[in-house]
Image (cartoon, rainbow, N blue to C red; front, side, top):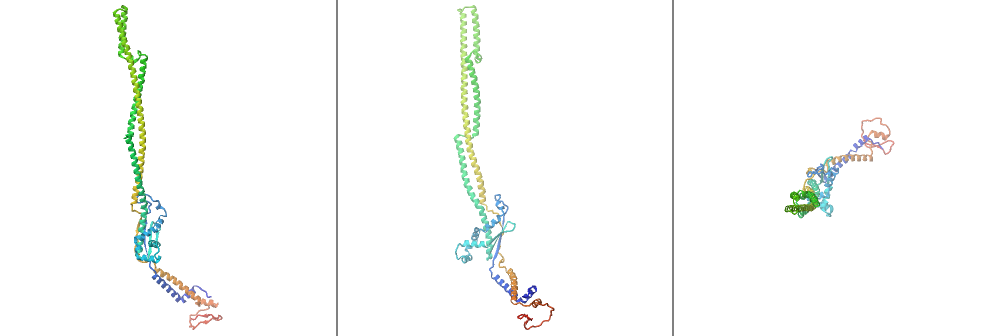
Length: 470
């Protein structure tokens, strides 16, 4: 076996150059023909920018979900959703195209739903990927139709925006409908609460519970003061009556009576006159009898006046006691009114609390209803088209220059390989090193003379081995 080194390899390639060149040419021609015969595929892409601020531009509320690392991945899954693909099929009216119908019949023999089949085919040729370290999504669609690929890419972007808007608006619409029902129910509750408090005020005749309570309380305080004064007056009158009844002559009220005081003065003067006459005249004397009769008359008047004064004091005491009793009854009645007003005010406060609670609940729900109604009518989304897909100018596959370049490399490697295989099947001496190795003797010298050899010569001592012809 002759050795194989780099020099031998180069000599073998030069000797087998025809095989190498033939293999290379055939490989390149084959690659070129196949590339030319392969169907051309075109690719178009749309870029979308996703607002990554984490806040809703309409309401200003933060959206923590947008801050999650998987937010862009979720958007990619939404774009690849069958719902989006079906909308693209409907928007582009692919079902009505004869070419699509022919492909469907060829692929499925008419079995199944062409709309679902087209959506599956679109998703197979769709590529969605976020750009590195950015909030930009790229939608790329590939296909044989130069115009269709751009339309499909743009249609996917539009359908994705519509789906995002629907996912945002539909919950708001449902919430708005729910809050609308709640507002109606709470408005009815508020009206019922207000009706109850109005009816209660009409039944009780209350215009202002606090104002009326203040008036009745002031009246109660005034009556209480009058009662205290009447009770004091009754006690004083009772004391004066007792004094007049026990000792009328010593009673201050009796003594202070000017009529009684005058009669007592007259009685004292008549008594003095009678005493003076008794010293000079006898009891049967007309003057003595006249003086005695006058004294008796004055004393009788004095007793009558003392009796009338005592009766007046007793009557005053009874009047004061009656007045105190009446005031006591009025105070008790006023207390009952005040307590009744307190009870009505408490009941009115409970009804007013019901009204305030119903009003507050309706205000809160009305505010939420207004907000959700605005959100339900909003057409704002956080996704915008950065660059729309354009009709591609050239096909991205087959790449003829690249295929030919690869064919050159592969053809060269295959040619060298086939040359080496041919050399192994018919090994020749290609250099002096091969000769020295074959003869097991060193090469002493080399000459530049060339001799034409008509045929191979047999090597001495090695039957069946020949030197190559020159």
